[in-house]
Image 1 (cartoon, rainbow, N blue to C red):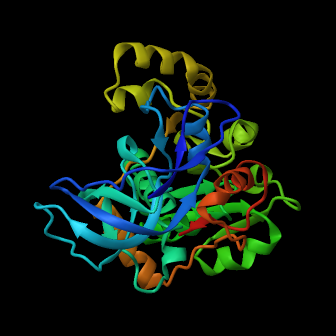
Image 2 (image 1 turned 30 degrees about the vertical axis):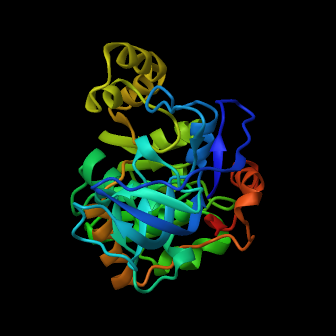
Length: 333
């Protein structure tokens, strides 16, 4: 089968498309024929070696963390899926491989895809959906009536985070571009800031939580709207001591992450808040809850109109890294 593989960590890495053996599913895995795989900023973090302290891969490794497809065969212990099932998945961090014609995936990381979405749109849901779900429930422990601000929340993450937050009873504020305002308000946002016209940090009442999707350049603004006792959860700014301890990492990795995150911890502590970083994990049970929400609310994630095949994988990565995609970038098989 054809697969796009990383041969070594490199700040200017390129993936190589090559023929490799088709995977054989273990007793707890399903073999999926991939229809679409999504390309995410996570690929840049993996390919450059930026997250190898969290997860190091034996080389070469087939890349890709998110897909939709059809079950071909199932392992002996698999009871929830059968051949022919239309599924989607955020693959386990230790065994990625969505950029391939077939993928063997642990059954606990798989769910039936939403019935209201085709394979293309389904592939755009798992990573952002699970990030939003785990961020709000497990990292922030958000409660009904509390307030959350998502700078840059008009993109693909916000499309999933907003309805999940609203279902939890949260008051949701978002900043983004003008063209996304109407859709965000229809999605349940309480307050929307057009970043070209308004500075949310000058107008927004203090919030319990900020979810950062932008990175370090936005930190000062985010801290200005955070209540004392609140939490800043970042998808982009990197791990700290709390992340290492909560993931039961080694003493060495805990020390390294403590040093790397010390400035962020100091800055958030200065306003009486706490800093958190999330590195989302696969979870089929949570993905089923997200499926229910997507079907009930008829959520249709945005996907970029550019068509990529597996041979175009490096162009797709380039668009995600340096371009301005109009939604999730997909590889079609």
